[in-house]
Image (cartoon, rainbow, N blue to C red; front, side, top):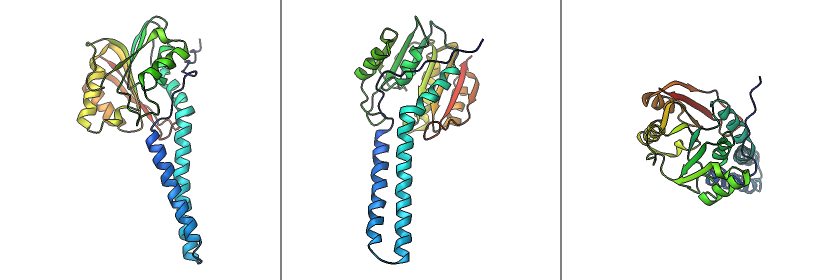
Length: 246
């Protein structure tokens, strides 16, 4: 029988990923265009070529802005569905989303269960996602019709407030790369593995450090650790790293 296509979150307002980066790229894209216009006032082939190069640089920045906006609003949904398809989610599973933000992944996971629980932790940094706030996260869960299955907790990924072997699945999307030091990223992954039950699955979606994540996951006690191909539906393109706790 064909596998049912996972339902993802589609009723809430999930904001824009990396709004500061998008804003900076937009401004950077404006500056060379303005400079190029000024250069065109200086007659000559050399100035015209320089202006053209500046226009091209501005265009590249604006293309990146548009790709990041498309990724936040549409591309991410395509990839999150692929992530869910890689997880053997049971109707009664307890699932942890590390860095849940406004709840897009969290609510998509909650839609896969009937009597389990999807718990999201975050520090709700507005630099990571526009309008980041736990009240928004819970409101989005209400809009999706799965509020009773969702819980949010303010916590750091490197010190999860849960006992060992608590969750059937642990997921993190576009979060771990925000931790600057490799040893601190290792702590976050060790914590994800610590709270995962034996036989449970972990998955990390990110656009950086995939090989590092895979190594830390294996070192922390996961087997069958795998790195997916690049998913270009998001910008920057991402990979999904998965593993099963021994």
